[in-house]
Length: 428
Image 1 (tube, one colour):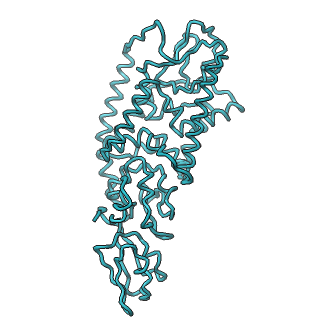
Image 2 (image 1 turned 45 degrees about the horizontal axis):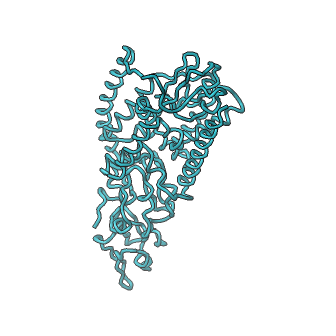
Image 3 (image 1 turned 90 degrees about the vertical axis):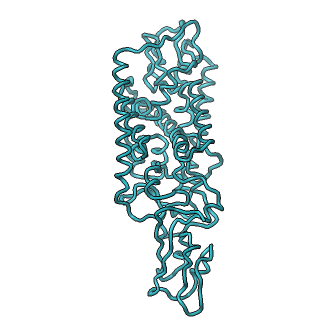
């Protein structure tokens, strides 16, 4: 075994372990020291599209550039869902050996469908297969996340990283970039075709008999380098051999069919975007969400905001509204907090300052005079002084000042105040 390659593999594992630990802590709202999730491919892309964010565009270009130079290292270093699959793979090795994975053109059509719908204007499709969203959903015990975890674990015990290589839409895009990367995994002339690398490859991208490596599928886990007894498998620029790019008839047919599906899905996405908002209940959304129609089509349901909300009033998607939303039944939106805006990686909740948040109307209060006890607690609780009290009279709400934070409702002991959502959030 090559000591240098073994060290490189272990360094990669340590780095991935740190990223995974930070991901767990971040999703659970325990520790969020760096914007780790701002480096996730899909959230970056959506922030570029939704917010025209220069920062997101620079990070996205950097991510693409790194993939072009080094190959598909994102899947083994940055993606928490990918790292989770690797951990399960280690556990699986103690119980069973899976047969060699087979990679199909299916991934191009999965990517064509979900990316087409996404570019059509809605994230409703991609949130069910995008790895970052699934990881967050699983950590917050949503039905979608739990189902994804069960299916992926079952798949790992049969075919290792089959999700990454055959279903993940992000992996498909990064794989196409990685295919033309100058740095590749390749098999050198000293290889004795023992098959050790092929048997240990979780992506099924190595053919030891023909001494070829499919670098489009390869996730650069470097496991093959660490297990090769001869040091016959390398990572870098392959010497003395020029890779000739050629398209076979089968590849052209697949590419053409996938592009046709992609075009059709863009149109379907536009229609879906308008259709899903036809019958939406009145909901209150976090400041920076805009309106319920746009937010429903942008939210990835990663639930990072759910875990990080200090008052736990942000709730997961449910049957009546398929995206996160506010629930004032057990609390209210703190006036001095804009945590959800800080942690949302996708731009569904725009990154606004605390001052902007404090001036954004997310709802409107209404006082029921028949239930009001005239105690005045609501006026004392209101952070913007939108409620005026006179002794012995029902408090009067100044609608111009009300931001719909729910502090008055939380203070009321007689259930005399209701908060209603607004059609469009406004900052004044």
